[in-house]
Length: 310
Image (cartoon, rainbow, N blue to C red; front, top):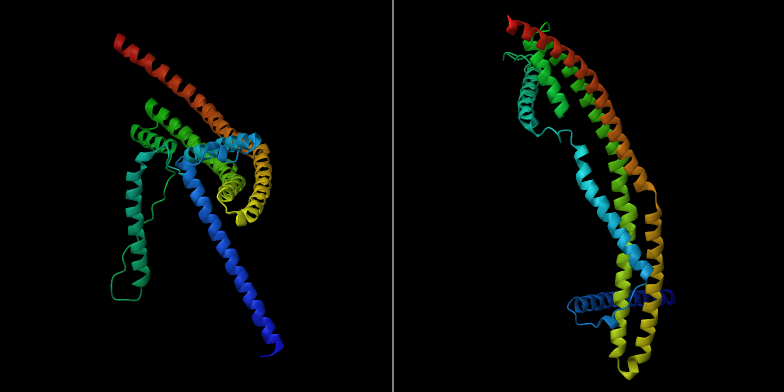
């Protein structure tokens, strides 16, 4: 075997031994950490033998937990803005009807296209159904418009229903605009904070927990070590202490950065702004139409009293 081949073989052997040794060390540490965590959970470890983390770290942990809970809770609720039908659940019957009609359109259109030039009669294509917005306001608009058509444009109720239909459509459109703004300006960045900054801080905290378990497991090992193993055990404890200090400092920095970030406040402000614009638009539109309907109501009541007096 050549000198180069011998050197390569020896190098590969060292790499393999190093890899195996490193892997075995990680497995051993993971096992020791798991044993330490289990013993702590079962109360088999004295509280005095559990390393106390800095008070600043524990206070930051509590604040980060509160921030994470707030993000999760608000996201769970505000995700409704991503569903057009959140205030109009009975729309499902309309959707089934529309689906059936659109399926008929698709089938007849397909048949009409593929039967051209054959002896089979070409079917008439069923018109596609235009799907209207599925909000409560749009549903009220459609119902009022149908009522206005049935009553007739010259009847007071017909007039009132017509202007009510128009204003409810306007309110419905404003609601859809609100939902779009909330999705873009609140939901997306709020979710991003949860899955990035908060997730990074939580990962750093998990690293601190593992490092603390490793340190306490090393201390337990040193307590029970033979005289021949005492020096090695002491070095392992010192290394674990250094690792815990370093990881704790990193976690504290990341948690402070997260808590100082103004992004969640900005996102919440955008949520409020979108809601304010919607409610202001709705209030203004409804106030106008209510005055018009009230005039029609007064006139109708006046005529009704005249007929009753006679």
